[in-house]
Structure formats: structure tokens, C-alpha cells
Amino acid sequence: MVLRNADTRVAVDAAHGGAIREFSWRSMAILRPAVSSTDTDPMSTSCFPLVPYANRIAEGRFAFDAQEVRLRRNWDRDPHPLHGQGWRSAWTVEHSAEARATLAFDGGGDDWPWRYRALQEFQVLADGLEITLSVANQSDGTMPAMLGLHPYFPQPAAVTVQARARTVWLTDAQALPVQEVMTPQDWSFERPRRAARVELDHCFDHWDGTAVMTWPDRVLRMKATGAHSLHVYTPASADFFCLEPQTAAAGALQRTSAAVAQLAPGESVAMKVRFSVEQA
Image 1 (cartoon, rainbow, N blue to C red):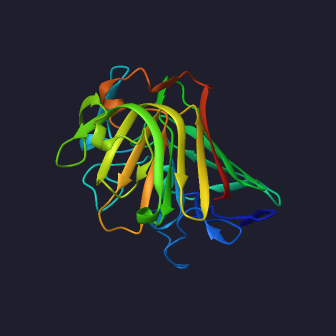
Image 2: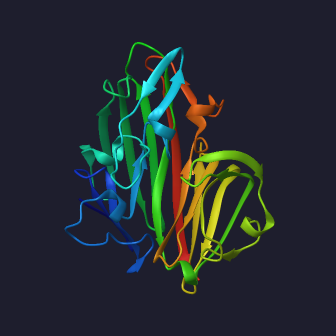
């Protein structure tokens, strides 16, 4: 499904994780294009949703409301389940028009014991894209919930990034968060710096919701509403980098963090991310 508005083009793949395969503006790739037209792995796309939790769940275990939850591995390259269920599942197109679409995913009632409905609403803009991701609890008990988006941005060696986040979670050898510290100066994006300067796979917390990316030919502003954490992934020698807005920091479910939404039956939580692009 291809959505268009003026110079903006967005291709959405509902059948494979509700993922974006292309987001371009004036023929420039704003997100990394899908690796190939035939690769259906969401990790090879431009962006995919994180629902009903974000990032890794250590050993797939956490306790909530006196209930012990054990999640299965959901990706063969990681021993810990990660990024929820939506990205590994088919979504349904609830509505589509030239520049708008709504996708739905009904999940849970399995190793994730709560049933829920997730929605992704895409609004293609003349200068970018707005995505609203939400999840509603359809079970009989209170459900924890985290949301996130996993966008892949191109050309890490050519871009500077500016973002403000007060703290960051240090990790162990398995990329699991172990300690929250004040953001070290060498990791800080408070002042614009090259995305690829430091190799990171860390979740920054107390984020102000804004990130500005500047390439030689374009400027991209990402503004997230309802997201207070930003997971930064800058692998060495890769042709992409990731800035992932999340409603709560990595590992929050296992810390019983207040940042994790606790949804009573029928309640929902949402986050909105707007990508605005302009010529440099």
C-alpha cells in the first residue's frame, strides 16, 4: 500500500509487521528503504511498531499484579524476546485513502496473557509523516503496556544528531539494562554530533521528545508525544542508525517502573511521532 501527499511517498506493508518499507520526500530517502523488495523480515524494513512492549525482556520473564509471565523467544538472533508481538504479525487494513491509513492488530491471550487491540494511524504530510500508535486492553484484568517505533535512518556517517536526554541505561554483555546513570558527555547528543561517532545500543531516559537530524541536503525533525525514552542504536560500520521513541525505557517491565502504562479493561495508551523534513 502506497500513500502520497505532494512530494512525500510512504509504502506500508500490513502483512509483515505493519512495517514501513519506504518513506521518501522529493525522491530523498528519509528512512532507510527496505533492504530488498522480497525481504519480508521487519528488521530489513524502514520502520516497524513495538507493541505491547518495547526492547528486550530478559529471559522473557517478568511479574505483574501477582502474575508470573513467561514469553517465548521471537527472533532467532536474540536469546531474549524483544519488541513485542506486532512486528512479527500481520496487521489488518482498517481504512485507507490517498494520504491516510489505519492498521489494526489483535494480539495477546497467549504467552502474553492479556488480549489487546493495537492501532497504527498513518498521516502522510506534504513535509513528512505522522504516526499514532495505540494499544487498548481487551482483557478482564489490568494489563501493562509499552509502545515504541523502530525507525531506521540512512547515512550515519553523513548526519549530525541533536537530542536531549538526562540519563542513560548502562548495559551488560547481552545488551540488557543494568544501571541508570547521568548521560556521559561522550554519549550526549545535547550538542549536535555525528551519529556514528560512538557505538551505542542503549536506552536514554528523561528525553524531551525531540530529535533533529541534519544531512548535507536535508533536515529531519522527529517529535514524539507520549514518549519519554529514546533507544539509540548506532552499530559499527552499518549503513543505518536507529533512534527509537518509546513510552518507557528498556527493561521497565521487569523494574515495575511507573513509566509502564497500567491499563484497566477497556483503557488505552497512545504515542504520536511526527517526522518533519525540509531542504538543508
